[in-house]
Length: 136
Length: 136
Length: 136
Image (cartoon, rainbow over all chains, first blue to last red):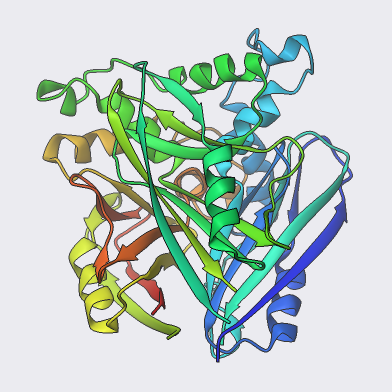
């Protein structure tokens, strides 16, 4: 029988740039929803954050910062005239505002090394992420 | 009760590169669908357009062009031998072909500064975007 | 009437970097699901692969490799100290772990030139992709 469950996660970020592993929180929401087969959508409501899925190895967390640095941080952006965070907006677009993950047999179908990260790109701030589980 | 609604938006683009705010059109479709809690998927049917979510500030619209220019426009691409728009295809892949946004209490859950953009990367052309609202 | 169908595709990749057109496999799954109107989610369970939608022209397949090369392959990444594939992880993040495509009148709504690609970024390996069709 069709069911949909929507939950908001609130987070305080600590750094200007930070990658926060929210996998446990999302898994709890999926578990509590009682969904056996379905799809989870995780969505950030902010234009200077992003969501992505990858490995949580400590070295890689440093490399994710490098990925963002391949976009020049200061490049005479127009937006920097009114708010000096154009780089955070452009990084958010490159990474994306949502991730979608299947749920099977009651479990989020992350692969062995996959973790869900909220990328804080212009912190520290208070942030809100929506988790929706649709299915049965 | 489960319900799904699918609508096609047709758009004429004006420029070679253009960022078109389609938020109002998507909000109208969500409203007309009568969905109270659900998920909206917005999908572009073209390989030289993309969809993304970010702020509509006038300076940032210029900066979005800069983001695309960090991918070299002419670099002896193989595809340019038959159709000189490889850069548009690569930009489309970097940005993505769809966005997914939760609907709660009958409203698209965009954050304060979030707007939905269709990126025209090889215009001007006639373009088609599908909006689907699934929920109840 | 609401219905959800989940199928796993298993693939053996041949190259270190390879773009595999899985459109036919996904279309078969959508067709067998009997879904008339719905949404298909395609998801990769690996941190060194990605999914994207674009054209299958032979020259473009070479250009997709160029896109990845704009991220430096060797740049003293921290992760390369334990596993020399940081570039594959960063490429995966840039491209994304899933694609979402509408289904209408029983057909996947790909545009004329759109094909679905699994990007192998650290092969050859055995890979698993989940295809979910939700709808009616």
